[in-house]
Image (cartoon, rainbow, N blue to C red):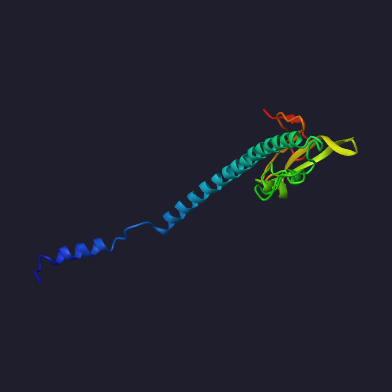
Length: 179
């Protein structure tokens, strides 16, 4: 070996001994920053999910109210339906009847559940005409299945439709109008 090349080899071996990359401490700091950002984003995502569920509940109330109006005009002797199941039914399985009107999505009608909210028709007012009960009024409610997780507000409407009112506590004491 040439004695002149020996110092150059030593310099090369010293350079290759220098570690390229991140230290363990730098990696831990980056991971900690990412975790903090994820925690902040999770709170925002949760509130966006609750808002989406509430919008879905309001729209479902409007769809059910529209189905009630159509039911009343299709079966005038019965008036309004006093049960969600009556508004449902599998389309195309048979002809619509007063007990299976096929006006509402069967999943919502059979379970009363959609997008974190429970829907219910209650407080039905009846009038007897020619020996047949005719429903002339009802109250429709949508309450969160898990208040604070699937929704914050409960919503209500009646046979007059219009803008649903809401209960800020997630119950059925709907006194405040939607904006």
